[in-house]
Length: 375
Picture 1: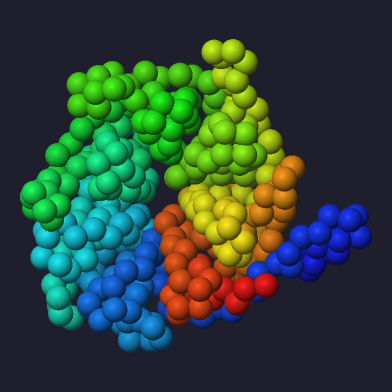
Picture 2 (picture 1 turned 45 degrees about the vertical axis):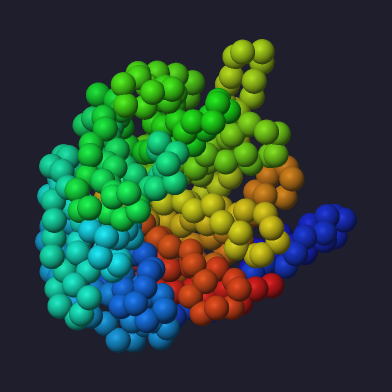
């Protein structure tokens, strides 16, 4: 109802906007793992869903197969990312994960049949909040970057042969001695190199990524920040801004980059102060208008009910930039069992070939697909 009222108000005010996108929910499972991604597991040309202990065969996602039993600690499954990558170059898609309690970055090997996936350790990193894949060195291949609060910031580069095929081993490159909760990557200063965004500032990339020093600019304090912190030009002024969720408190904001001569500052603007635990954000074109939207939602029981707003209704949303601010559109909202939140890692992909991107979310409140029916 909130979205309808916003649309009517804008229309009556002479501001013409497209009606909100409609979504149809499919509950996949009541698993309580918090990470999900989609890729073709069995090589049949169909996208499958991979989440926690299981993968679900596309396009119906009713047939499930065991990946392997993940260690459970209290309410958590120790599995905080699902990053597809053919690590050993055998043509089958593997994935990279890791967890807080085990403190190890891992890759799980696709067996090519319905057997369990072998687990390979990449590094004993210490507690992993979650991990992301970014092309840190600009060579066209993704590197793996775990967020390990209180530990060194490093990225892991897959060793490849001359044809670009993975060789099953990773090289570690350290960036900083320590970092906090929250992590992003993007070109802040426009020099063509990607910088790392930390809760207490941004690390400027050196010309020589292997030997140069990453310089910390303490231009902001983002609090208990999301992973990722998005680096995007929100207002189209040619400068990259930041979009940040409060992962363990209330708040979703964007920080406008403003330059005054050689000095830069970041001006905070509220997007949504009324929802807590915005832990994971995605920046995609959800309505096919050629412009990007922000997709995010509440992480249910991120700290087992001990975060501010833990008992609030669940919500999954997309926020559309209207030229001056973000308009909030509801994908799902309500109490547990009705509303659906986002976990720690989710996917936005066209699962059924409709031409519209669907939203696949896991979490302690279950695993579901929201099919995008357009507007």
